[in-house]
Amino acid sequence: MTADIGRQRFIFAVFALVFLLADWLSKRLLQGWLETGGPIEVIPGFRFILVHNHGAAFGFLASAGGWQRGFFIGVAAAVILYLGWRLWMARPEEKLTNIGFAMILGGAAGNLIDRVRHGYVVDFIDIYVGDWHWPAFNVADAAISIGALVVIFDSLGLFRIHPTKPSQNGAP
Image 1: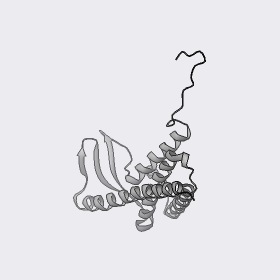
Image 2: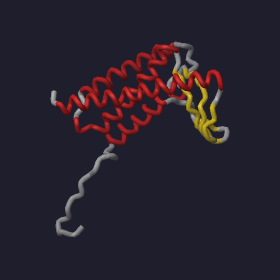
Image 3: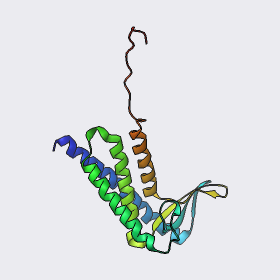
Image 4: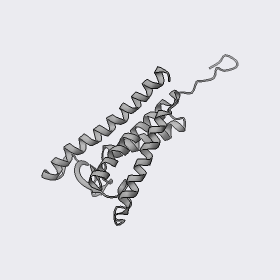
């Protein structure tokens, strides 16, 4: 193993850990405040509100009767294992993709901790316009979503710098 690969593995692990800790700390801080004081209006259209999400993204399968808890724990564990392996085997030229994977890994770990401890995921970010509300989410969900976009955009080549070819006749 070269020093560069070892350093990259360490950086990706730290990056995932930063998102896991940001999620965990934000939940610890805001859950206590929201349980005692209720919703906190930050600015119009953005507030903190306590939501216990028994489902997956956007509350998917939230009212499925309880079997979904084990299912989501298994899926999250499989994703975490896969992404951990994928980041361990990361190629140095895939930096952006690996950053996206590290974000997804940190977010998945944050939500897994909630699901194992509580049986649900603690969500608290509420974005809305008038009576329309985006489904409540948390730091882990944001990391997963942004990380997935980074992976998708990088795999499509949208973040890559493409060298320009010099013209044949010397004109630009």
